[in-house]
Length: 451
Image (cartoon, rainbow, N blue to C red; front, side):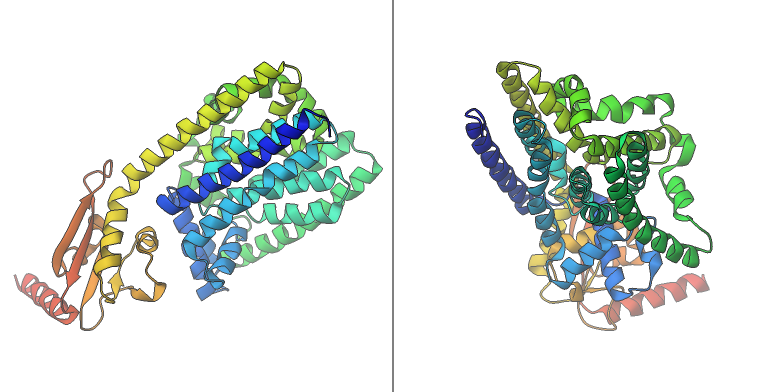
């Protein structure tokens, strides 16, 4: 190892450790800000209860739900899933370094450092979402193909293809890439990887077709959910993931990526082709209204962008490289501050209501239609029921607009208004005896019917 690389390597190790501690601190102090994470966890619980119920996956792929169900089986819970991701995020910079190192030691260290402190992968790793495992799988695919290890690459690609639809586009792009530039050995390893990835995808599509009554029914369902072409970005969508989101999540350091783009494509061609496929997929869905255009979808493109940053640093002086690192660190600080403040503003009322139930429910069954509120209480699943018990005390927790007749059950213990929730409130109601409430409800219904 050259002399300059030793302190840089030590700096990388320190950065990886520091970012891991930051992620763990965020998990310990802030709730998961992504509502989809709670939906995935609910799907995983439904999968455990009814393994043959395909509808529990909705329009999502099953891979992440299987992972979450395994974590639930191990009693890790929702927080455990977040801790799993926060720890897993340590690996991607290391794999990225080892994959880039044969081309340039310095570019590899800069790429790994950028991957470590980039705000998007760091913050998404505090959520119980699938992106962290997906990014690691994608980097694993590229590293496996770079070393002509088709089995390893195929296993990683199969995981990726069962996690997110972007991996399907990456698989197609990898096939095109190896056909254009690959040698015979590269073609064999890539063909093996694609075959290993295609098999479980085909099985999943067949299972869905049998349940849905048609092939790929989840595609129009997804488009309908996000609004379809009416809500597409049009030509502006061409810039969404090619400029707007990268500039937002990487700040001025993105300039280094532009300088090093060509060098990165030569150094890690497998990752370049996979990223190109994902970029084309994400851009098309933005243009034609097939996705919500969320920032977190760019997480899959961060590894290649970081390699480009590394090769961009090669073409500039050390002073410019340090300035880029400082800019990325400043961008991280801004994003962490924004994340903390926005999460508190969005989830503070829900945390307060859930905390009241956690501290004061005294073992009573809790009726709570919101999975997110259930998980925020940290109560065991057995405490939650779908309806009031036949008799005895109970607690009702939920958004007031979603509780129906339960919005008047028992006495009001607390009401927490959330900013930006259109006047809706999270409420907690304590029912002294569920039988009395049911009797009064039936009497009111009878009286109303008579009138």
